[in-house]
Length: 301
Image 1: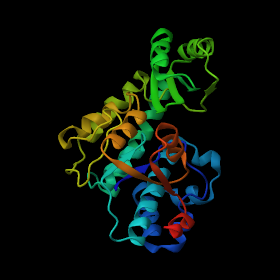
Image 2 (image 1 turned 30 degrees about the vertical axis):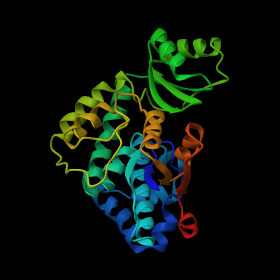
Image 3 (image 1 turned 90 degrees about the vertical axis):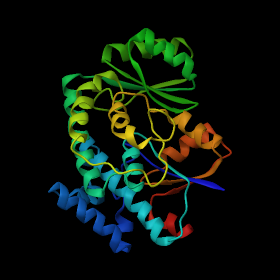
Image 4 (image 1 turned 180 degrees about the vertical axis):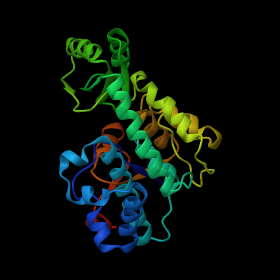
C-alpha cells in the first residue's frame, strides 16, 4: 500500500503546538532550541505559551508550523525507524516542510527561507493591500470564471467544496456579490493580512527569487509534489516553482487526485491541526487519512 506524508500550511497554528513532543522527546526539543538559536528570539515560547495573537502573526505562524511539523515527523520516525513512504506533499508553506524532509534544504536553511518569506509577504501586503474570500459549495470552474470577471485570482483549490479567492479589496467585494448570485451557500472573508497566492504578492516573489539564489538545494531523496504543478518536482525546477508558488494557485485538489491516480491509499498529516485531513476527506473518501499533531496520536501508532 502506497503512503504519502503531508504537512500543513498557515492557519493550522495553535498555542501549545509541538510542546508535548518537545517535553517527551529530547530530539524534538532540540529542534525548537535550534530554531531559537538561528532566529535569535524565543520562537519556542511563542509556540508553547502564545498568546494566540502573537502566534497568528505571519512570521511566527509560518516558522512555528514548520518546526512543529518537522518535530511531529521526526517523532514518527523515532517511533518507527523503518517508516516507509512513497511521496511527500505540503500545502503552501507546508511544501517547504516537505522539501526539508526530502533533503532538498537543511533545517537551518528552511528556517532562514521561511523567515525571509514571511518578511517579504508582509511587506507585499503593506505595499499592495488585499483580501481573501473562502467560497463553499460552488464548483471550481464557476469560480475561475467569477474571479476573472471580478478581477481577482483563485488562491487555493482546497477541496471540491472549498475554493479561496484572492485579490484587491474591491475585486473581492465584487467576487463576493457574484458568488452569492451564483448560488454559493457560504462565502467567508478570511482574517489575513493580504492577498496571498495572487499577483499582488509579486514583490515578495521577486525578493524570494533573489534570496533563494544564495541557498544551495540538493536533489530530492523522496518525491515531492509541487503546489504549482500538482505533480512531482523536478530538482532543477524546484527554486523557480517555489518562487511561482507565492503568486500562483495552490493546486491541492489536483495534488490529491494525483496521489490517488498514482496508487496512494494512505496519507499521514504531520503537524498541528487537522486541516488537510479534513480537506482530503472532501476530495476522495477512499483515502485513509491519519494525523500526527500531538503525542497521543503517536502513541496510537
